Image (cartoon, rainbow, N blue to C red; front, side, top):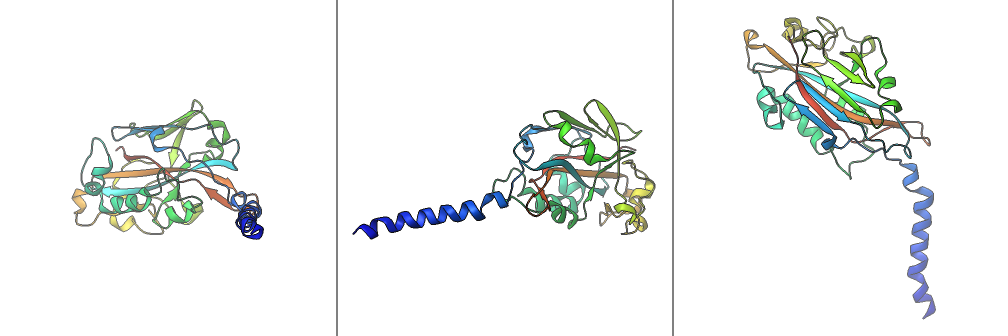
Length: 248
């Protein structure tokens, strides 16, 4: 009789011991920026309210992934229901990421592989390391993205404004006409959309050269940290900053 009573209790204790020795401390989790913390304005501005709840996590910095989409239509604002009209690949890419936004079950997914597998690149800054700028100093602050000026789209963090730069894949490809997020004919020209030139741009099928007037950049943000047990990078789930229309 007694052994029957204590057997379930023994199994519970054994399971608890296993979880403590092989459990969640081996798989640290980093909090994401809630999508509700991001305010999108028209087609050219966004503010990101950065939480301050990373003290008990292996947080290192935030990373921003982006991709540029050629289009033949203007959109004064770019909510989700406009993505297909802008570019069908934008809609397809977004649908691949949407299930991860604000998810409490999709944790410890390698966002580097997820985004780069869809052709996304890491956003950069002119003359500054963006990972340093988006480190612990921005916790509890607001980061602003502004694509409204034809001079160059910018990011403002801690009262300092930085010019956004496109990736060059650490020298693997050579963005044309330059690394600024400015809409120019060289950016959307079909012969430039290759792995060696504008590897961060995706074409829109079914439109003529004369219709290629517009380009949009989708930006997603994720928190990044280091797993102290494996020394590998770990990521939070992503949030959509905005789909910005690039200025002319």
